[in-house]
Length: 104
Image 1: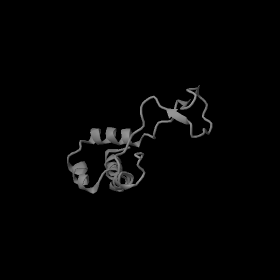
Image 2 (image 1 turned 60 degrees about the vertical axis):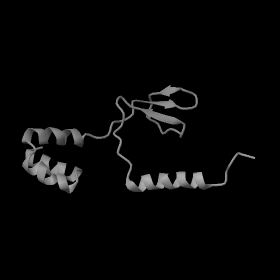
Image 3 (image 1 turned 135 degrees about the vertical axis):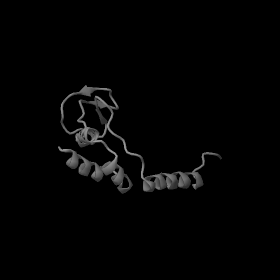
């Protein structure tokens, strides 16, 4: 991947307000290295653990809900969107305002 292609790739991954910086300030070698890191695919699980029994397996079969993937390094996490934050807030508000009290 050449520097120009690396910069174009980076612009597809970052907000438009960063595009000028990518074009004018990002050094060629650094742009290339950054693009290579970002272009790597998400890691695959190295094993699976059963949340109920604690059993481990290394096969790559489809697993039920009780099986959780294990990674060498944690998967990349994205921040919650405004929509997701609002949705969680609404659930909390509904729960606080509900009449599901345990008091007698």
